[in-house]
Length: 103
Image (cartoon, rainbow, N blue to C red; front, side):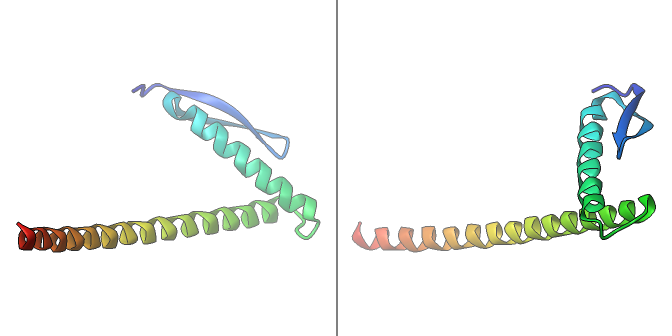
């Protein structure tokens, strides 16, 4: 894994930003910048929010909301997986007991 850093240029709402980041993270950063640009353009095109700073704040809030929802869903899925594993263990024990009756 490379720890070399370099400067990556990204464009958000047609404005250039030069950001230092590890070379191994450049593709991820580029994708993140493209996602942010897309979200900010959606907000700007709605016409309901004016000003670059307000557009950026609304985009940040929307993206944070998406992240928290995904995190909660992943947490719920992990709980569901643990419940399912316990249920499978109980079924296996019951089947083992049932097989011993017929042996």
